[in-house]
Image 1 (cartoon, rainbow, N blue to C red):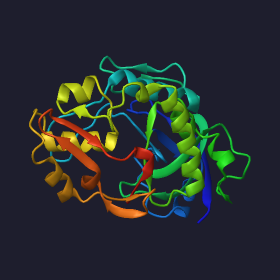
Image 2 (cartoon, rainbow, N blue to C red):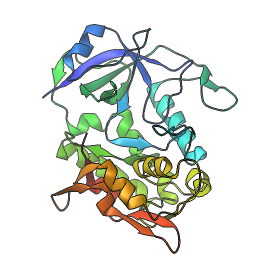
Image 3 (cartoon, rainbow, N blue to C red):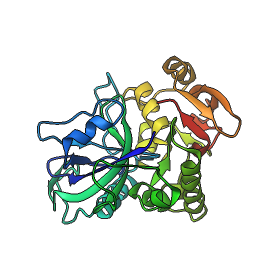
Image 4 (cartoon, rainbow, N blue to C red):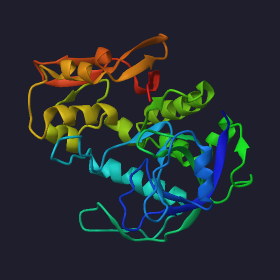
Length: 285
């Protein structure tokens, strides 16, 4: 299925953008119907984008059914926010005192996305770009590696400000482009990679996971859901993960399994880690 070119504008005032999601209004709302799935729009016709292939540190996450909000290391999460907005051309950004909502900024900034589908929450899964596309609004194209390398998505990966997080349907050649960016960023200890505990292991206390050691956000979200706002031992964490049945493919092995099978828990040190690197995982949508 080809990608759809959708022109529009970025919208952030009164909203809470993060490193991998931002408000976007299509110039022609009829283009949303060209995507697979249903796009959720607010009263102003603005959709919340989900950036393809990347996951930024959580700056404000509330697990389902849990009455607490959590965040990962804020300096890195906010650096991803700032870089994403700068790459999109959004300037003069002023946040409220708690850095949760944009109070003012240059809004309605032109941009465009390349997308094929909306996910289950109604967010268009998108490669995101500043400015105007060379193609006509609403037209289709075959997405190339060269074009993806111009996306905000890949710029964030290249700077080490986000984790690679791949879902089914992302083409192998595009994954390889992100893998190359991740390899370079990791080798340079850029951004999250300077302190990453995803594979080396992170002590599973809320304070450590929130303020000290970054881990793959997907793992962080499951930990926060399990811990429910209080520090607890990890004795039942793998069983909890198994109940969630987060399906995925280990790419290098060609083996379909679930997230719990690649999570290692060491109770003696209260640490948790993944046994495979994030870029070797292809999650079910």
